[in-house]
Image (cartoon, rainbow, N blue to C red):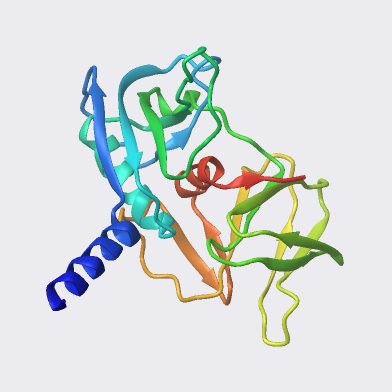
Length: 225
């Protein structure tokens, strides 16, 4: 009986933490020192395809999952990526499945990677709903969702978590400023397991994200208007 209980616990642990990132193929590898891993659209970008990884199993620890993908990307010198949908029997592209998905890895000169400007990305917490106020406009987030807001040039924006002891962040908009990425959090964020390319600032329960990690969240989270 005790062995059965232990086995059940082991299986439960595997399902809870059994995320795996494997190689599907490596077409080419190159030497590279770039730290970024930005999302691109390979259909409009002149990127060199290097390989593909597959994520199997789900984990709410997005930083850890991205760390595994990031490590494999740097093994072959990739500095950019895209989500590659699975196809059904009739050839139709399937929707994103957080339990199983593919990431294609590429290289292209950093200066040629497209960059958004004058926009703000706001990501929900990974495991709970959240409400915030952006210049007195209330925004309700479901867990694992995000929204993109265009910023008016020269205007100052205040993002608040609307809590008694919550956090607020002020942003000065500039149409020439690269996109900004913020995530709402309800727990202490630790250092990213993939080095500097990730979470780099914490302000209470609002954190600023580096683009590489934010681009990954834009794949695994659902966007809303």
